[in-house]
Image 1: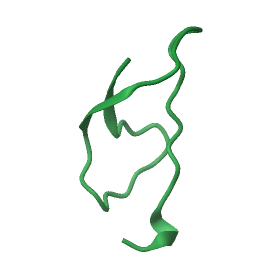
Image 2: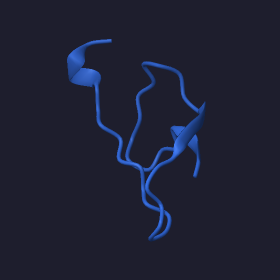
Image 3: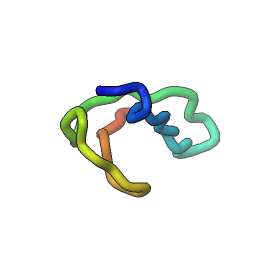
Image 4: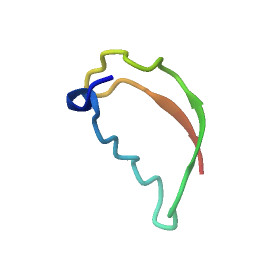
Length: 45
């Protein structure tokens, strides 16, 4: 994977007290083309 394909993903904050989350499962394979709004992972908070 080239550096120009690396994109930061911002995790939404689901509540005022949320400070961290844990990645439970990746929903896409490395190298998959994504668009805004595509689910990419499951998070445990």
